Amino acid sequence: MSGHVRSVVLLLLLGVVAATAQNASDLKTRADAAHGSNQVKPCLEYAHAELQAANDEFNKGDADQGQAAIQEVVQYARKAAEAAGATGKHLKDTEIKLRKLADRMHDLGESLAFEDRQPVRQAVEELQKIRSDLMVKMWGPDAQPKGGS
Image 1 (cartoon, rainbow, N blue to C red):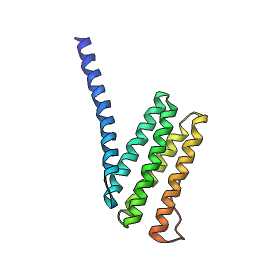
Image 2: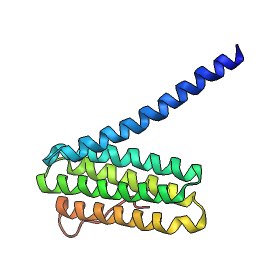
Image 3: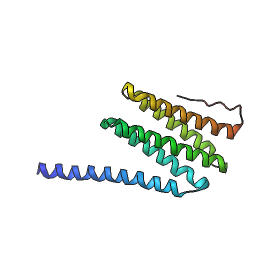
Image 4: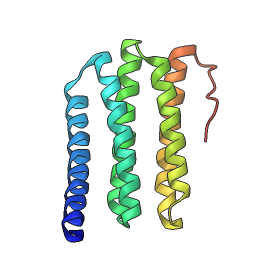
């Protein structure tokens, strides 16, 4: 009976992992297919999912895949900010989510091995720059980000 229970638990875990991978793939597809202000939310959702994937890769010891996922986070955060800035919609929500994304990425970076930290720190700086640029669009050139990492 114990072997049967282990098999069921293993199958459930594999199903959750496959569903998570499929969910991230679906989010990326939705983000790429959306246009205008409709692109903001799926891009941010995908960026968040990729940050979690990066964390998982680093925890598994695959720093190269983790760094690739970090770059994907920055790319989709930029897409979200550009869509929000171009349409003038979802600006404040995007700015808040970018701050949270940068904070979470900062925390992730500080938990890494020393040699893996610098690329993540640079990605955090890129996110902060994207956020600053968005704030300038919202409030003008004197806007200063608060709550930075």
